Length: 332
Ligand SMILES: [Zn+2]
Image 1 (tube, rainbow, N blue to C red):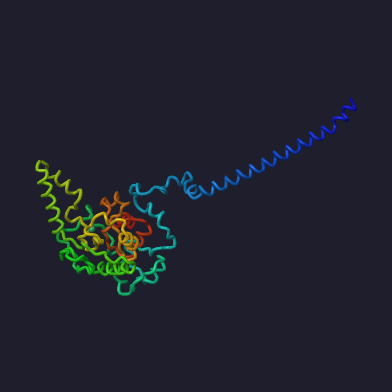
Image 2: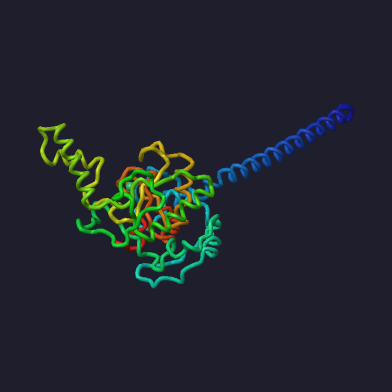
């Protein structure tokens, strides 16, 4: 037995050695796999991090990823465009309702604020683009904010960049807005946007009524059996009731480089440039595509409204349309 034990001992050593090697291998494999899992764990955290950080249970309550389908959020909630507009540095002058007008800012200071320089000399235009009272032109004209039948601005002037052949009574707008528009289109020409012209400016109550009534007559002829209400409902789908058109304010224009105001303008270089740069001249695209549920007006890539540069820039930064901005500012 003793001999046997002595004889088998080398095999024992070999066996023990093999076991040690096996254990070492196992440990190595374990260490490697742990570090591998750790690595991929990290990478999955950082990859998902962009979305994971805001989508913690709390943050997922906020409409961070929702886009255009987002219904109108009441006041003060910057919506989807906040995600798409990167500038963080801009702190537009705070001008609450009723505040005294701030010191008029210079074009140079404004350029620094928005990080974009003008290509034209703004000196002749600065006082118009940025009126002394920055909120003077911020108000709504719509179905619930109507203008009186006899309302007509006293400072209408002829629009310089008017489409040839348009009737005189569609070719005017308020003097301040007209000068701002001149600057806007002059800047556009520096960027090769050189064929945009205005097809509609001020529209009187009378011409709104004439248009509306002509549509009523057409619908009545086409649907002789329908009631007055039914006929009117048909017309209201595509035409505004007199006194509810923003064009009566003398602060907006339809402008484009097409034959007519139609959707073929949307997405063109000119339309994109106008939309991206209008705020620098105090204008807003009044009926944006992603705000139809708030404005209740169909997307109009050609319709621009003057509100002044302070408000237009703030609206741009906050991603708000005029309805949202007036809510935000408490303007009724
Ligand atoms: Zn219009």
